[in-house]
Amino acid sequence: MTSKKNMLLFIVENKFAITDRGLILTPGLGDKVKLVETGSKIKLVRPDKTEIETKITGIGFEGNHDIIISSEITTEQIPIGTEVWTVE
Image: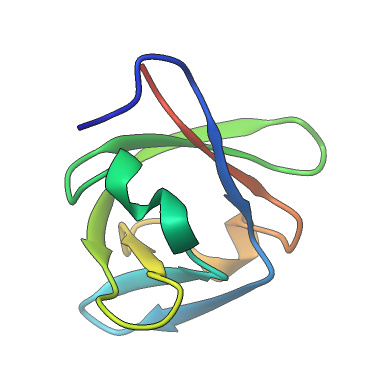
């Protein structure tokens, strides 16, 4: 289900840590929800151009399809403006 070419999914506008669940990133996937699934690898490119690779651990079913990533990543590590990309 992952795209064959790296694609920008969205730019983080907000983030919320949920205990024992992970970090929710918004505004979410919108119509790009079909490009990824739970378990898909993603790359987070922060405004300073440093990168973190992780996996999607959950996708919201309603609204903009917000994603959930590992609780090992903190809100401080993902500044507003971070780009969320697919990984080949």
